[in-house]
Length: 394
Image (tube, rainbow, N blue to C red; front, side, top):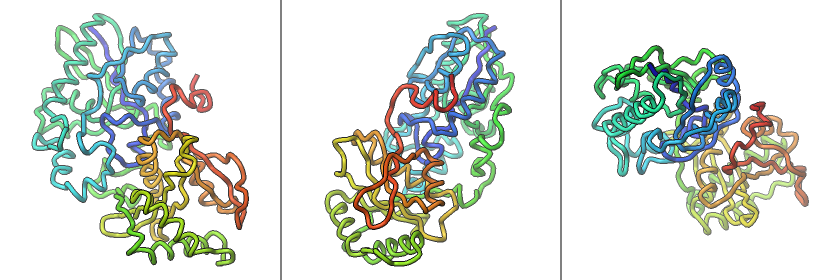
């Protein structure tokens, strides 16, 4: 009998930014690295003979922490990837809910009716992922193997091995990041000994511990999904101006040194260069914030610069702002930018805590500004093992 520990990858950008990442190659979050440390502790007394993962960064990074325990080479397989989401890849869940709500409902129900251009139907996913796991089992008779995989792929594999039709897949339940299932394979058949166990995760680092969408039909505000539309600087200039004015007053306590017309000219220049440069964050039909990007500034240095990052007062401190960071990453990463950069007043303690929580660090003091500002930076590139030592992973 072959024992297979089937492990979901640690929390990744799609989980945090509320974006659709199937084959999209996203990074592990800071909290994800804490989950990896907890997962590594779980496997310190479980000897493995081999370790496999999909060929995406989030599964490989999760697997490597376990490989280090038993001096194993990591074997990667494309057939262990997440479901291919087609044209939905790297779109926000909020955008898809707004523009393709019926198909999103089919997807959430794991219905065979789900279809999006270029996607991988659930029937194809089920056949692919179950065959990939059985292939690993045949290669390691009588041994104990680890496989790091993905949420929908694991869900569908467990349904196949439990003999459930597609329509009953959802009854399996969602898998937390780094949750573990144990499969026992023999003579081409698989028994599920246990599934979706996240007992190694303290509540404070469990992804599901902070989110309610997987448990309740209607989650909290922080579980809401934003979508983004260009802010037309010829029609919505008043909205932009008022946002700048409100933000300045909130941070500095007065309008001293406020140059609203200068901010508008700057935004208009960015918008005329590329409409993605000035975006409205929307929650359903409600205006929730503004994200402004400067696609030209320091492009030769690999920088994705963010001149304005704004949530309207009703949506502050609701856990939604991180989705604006996700949108910035989505625009800048395909352009080859390896870091995000922005300016933040040192006495804006709320913003400072927010940016540091999501991976920004001060790199220098801004020069020539009307008020003191810190230049803060966040790495968004793909560097093998980036941050492992700094996050306490040997």
